[in-house]
Length: 466
Image (cartoon, rainbow, N blue to C red; front, side):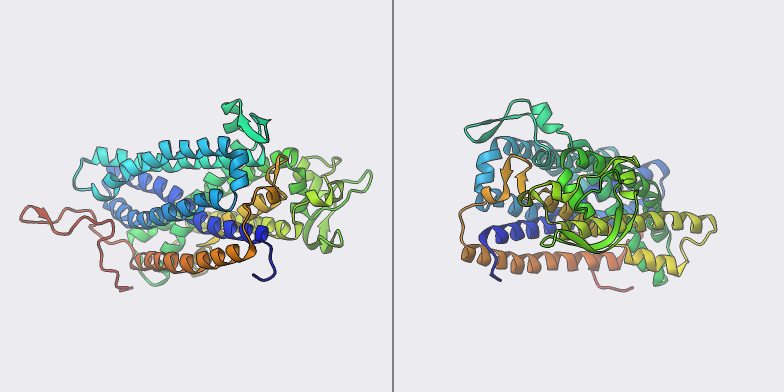
């Protein structure tokens, strides 16, 4: 297929399935906590707007959760089908970590999900709120184990290599490997920001069309408070994560910066823009700021950042891709910070809900969180190359013995099926969002002592009346 090798096709297929999958858990993590906050506020204040918003966003959560489970199952099977030698090498570590995720997080989520989605008028408010909190906790526990497994692949420790297999000898070191705390915080806050801008964009869409209700104002207000508080915190976490990556994966940092060589006695400049050329071993058309690279990456004006030429060519990540995915992620993060402070300025002047330029900006920023996560994920995973387990197992040695034809057929099948199935799911979710929250949702309506409608997480007619 297009002259690509089986290894390249396997990498593309895994990247494709991961890219689809990561969208849904990111939104699910943020929405689950948002739902817990909404229900808690409703119980505390009695404000029915929070109840209406809870019922509206619980439908979006249900759709995301379902698509996330399906895409996650497909992705996990690829460890055995396309990356069997990775499973053989690291299965004794990654297998138990993923099993812990199922035994703790997934069972916790599944156990309380039914009560959360279908039990509003069938259990007491305290028990229902507890179920919502348990689902939210389950999404965070799931994030813990998945990030622990992936972080071990980035910064492995707590193991021994016995007969060519990584065998765990200290599970605390395996789980709490050097990059894990930073990656866990970075991904969790990214999920919260993704949901915040998703919610904010939904509110902006309705406000721009004249639907200025209390529910829309609450949605936008809560989303912008999240952006104002969490986006700057995310920048700080990102800086800490960068320092950790510099220590344990210096080649990745060199690729992210498009930095090829150091001049004796000179601090490293920051390359704002350019085109890293892997063949010519230089960054062409670069625009740089002297010494700023050292200041940002080492917090010093004298220390130098490792350069790509200090690593053998076979150990260098693809700087052309990593350089730009990193900058896309940073640019979107800066726009999120701007959105937060812009909202604060408008809020102080009483114009948060009727400033059309701001509402258009927030509408366009709706997918920014997801795009930033994808860009960051590409930076992390491509920047780890040519290793699948950093310093221990090369990607070319981890792939299964498939031919180009088999990989081409399976990749095309994934593209067609995913586009169809998840395209329908996404379209359905957008129809729900266009309809928006309705008043008096959750109020019990019965006929002859029975519920007027069958149990369903999504009950409404989806005709778009906006």
